[in-house]
Amino acid sequence: AQKVTQAQTEISVVEKEDVTLDCVYETRDTTYYLFWYKQPPSGELVFLIRRNSFDEQNEISGRYSWNFQKSTSSFNFTITASQVVDSAVYFCALRNYGQNFVFGPGTRLSVLP
Amino acid sequence: NAGVTQTPKFRILKIGQSMTLQCTQDMNHNYMYWYRQDPGMGLKLIYYSVGAGITDKGEVPNGYNVSRSTTEDFPLRLELAAPSQTSVYFCASSDAGVSEQYFGPGTRLTVT
Image (cartoon, rainbow over all chains, first blue to last red):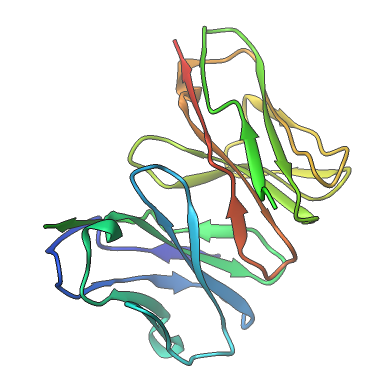
């Protein structure tokens, strides 16, 4: 069975702090894909990143970085020097090859000025 | 490219009424999905389709129906609306079995 856990329900940080959002997944498949989505207060869902199970390289995109560790079944997301515009709900998702997506419950991030 | 479009953006229904939520994508994606998101909660899959003419139930299909006569369109039908169907409905599409999903802007539905 597939499962995604985001243990942090809500996080509050002050602007310019770094923050890491945790994502732990469960799957028996060897080929799978991990995703992060952002849902700002306006409500839309924005795709941030996709990572396949064969690529454990960390990824950096501006202030965003992702750490994928198969050994701990984790795909954590770090925002460096957070900004108020980063305030949103962030969803981690898992997809086994050819199957449906399984979303985590989301982490609500509030960045305070 | 418009991506995934949904209409209407907002709707208020009375209990027992029916309606169709429209979803269209212009990316030629085979896979399409309908999710609902209750306030403060995550996404629950209602129905999905892997191609025209093929649909299947997701986690919470009761009270809904879908059809997929074309690659572009994937309407969601609500029959006999109930207050429990008050939610935000998102349509999404993806290219293949490995790709990310792209979401529409959502339809906020209230049933009173």
